[in-house]
Length: 548
Image (tube, rainbow, N blue to C red):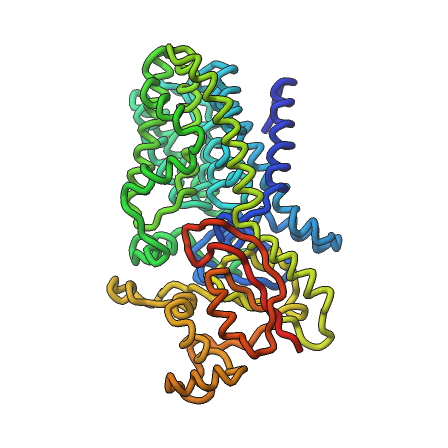
């Protein structure tokens, strides 16, 4: 992969590895649940035999290709009886290394496209200094993996802008690009948007050579077949049966439209929120770059930038038509946005605003450092810290007969699970309020009225508690009579009272009243956030302990 690497390149790559591994290890906060539940949790479940598989895995909606990368890490930890530190940080080290490879390829891709090593270094510096990259890139999201693969495949993709002939075509690099792109598409099916566009442009550039067009089509088909076979083997290894998650993904998201269950956003979401969030301090120069990229550059470079802009525009247009939207869904565009950002920096430094730019740049770097620190060390730190806190408490006071129970009375998937707890069923019984989608529904009206366990809990706290938990105080008995609840009634989600009960600050007053005159007392309190898009998650985490 690094054949012919020069000393300067080796220094750059070594720095990136050290930086991104350190970046991965230093993150102490939570972003979104998929980082743990869709990557680390299934890999942990496969190796150690316990954990929780979300509904996506039970209906074979996701391919195991990305989580499989962490299986060897967990296997080594299990085989050599590694300490908890390695269970927790081994996957982070691997992810940091992969991100360093992706960033190195961004440097090489920019150098290849624009024939300017200094410009490539500027793009790389912008990537390293990006606060959103520091916050998100080294997290174990499939979107981060997709971003890495997209840049690598783009590097090996034929970059000639003139019409191609057979002699100009490097089939070895083309095969490499196709195989990497294929892995990306199986990991994130929407990656096919980028490669459909790139493939169409490549075929158009070969229209004067039927032989070359034939070679391209046959090679693409062969690589697609190889990638499909390898992916099917990988999924068979996990699911223990032949399945096609890509087909299930299309059915769930586009045929049944069930993705809207997890939120629907306006079609302008990516323009007014998505791009500003993933660019953050890069945004001003990104806008300048978009506005001025056709000035002070060669015709060849303008052609390259036009292609990147069209590709990004098509990607955004299609994603804007999908009801469920998240910032990280457009993350694979970030490397190409940084190219325009670098152009904006260059233009600003060579314009009448040069002096202002030289003042603004250090201020933006300082702001980037603050944002990177705050969101990786402070904001939503409690939901990560609590896993180790409870783990230590459980292991310190381990029962010889019954596992210690923990109940999370929080929105579903608010914390990591066994990838961080790493406690066998004999040691701990950990449960949480679920949010399974209505896979049995296809009617949009019925879908809008469906309520999962987490919804029922927050819709009517008292009703949920009376129907799903045994009364443990006179207050509960009296309230049950007032509400005409039948004795020993059983709701849809019956639970036993846990040894440790966890809530967010939003429910503190309500839970204090409910647990008054019971065996529960407040055991600990952890800071989590000062603000949150979900008001139910704002504030501290509070842990109650049942005294026996």
